[in-house]
Image 1 (spheres, rainbow, N blue to C red):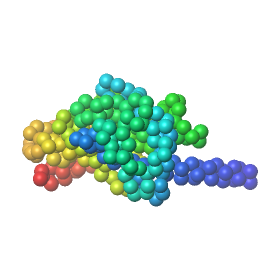
Image 2 (cartoon, helix red, strand yellow):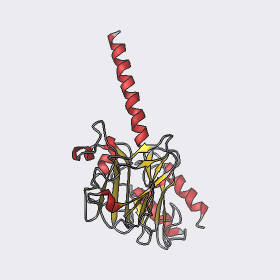
Image 3 (cartoon, rainbow, N blue to C red):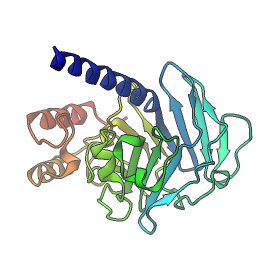
Image 4 (cartoon, rainbow, N blue to C red):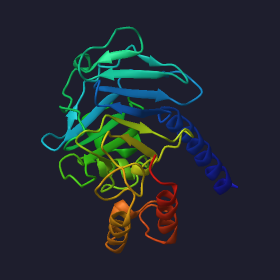
Length: 269
């Protein structure tokens, strides 16, 4: 009987923790606009979320562990099914749904652009009401994470908090990067299910001269031809993430081949 009661209590605590956890992770990084320098946060949940004490941790190929201040988002709330915009060019129009990155205090890695590499984590406070420096190593306090690099290559500076994001269940792999081009203009989250776990395949990158779909792996970009087939086979044979096109992510199997053939068969617009 004591064992049953103990398990029941533990179960109740687990359910409470899970519910609170899910609420904070309803805030997701939905888009990165390189042309305007705007980060869009979206509340995909069913309740407004107070952003007080929330903090960003950002990194690029030259900087890492750049933290915004504890007070940066105090007073801001993201209403349910609504967006909140962070302007890295410091040209926010004002109001309750936008803020300049300079007003966040602390330090934000710059520039936030498509060339090079960039990693970004959004952290929420724990039971003590703040995100202190030990907390940045706790993946359970990451609401969302995103990382991209030109060409999709791994970067050992910008991935400074990627392992925490993986352990926290918000990113698929430390070496998985959204592939951008030097002229990429936008990264958009395609997943509308409010899933916590994301990886490169959950995003669309808009590039004027970039690949037209997941099968467009080789030059000339925008055209699907035999060079793309060779590129896929090479990537598949070396277990390159570029060929990991279908779940389970991290496993290279027939589902990736089917995903490539499907994308290749759909052609470029």
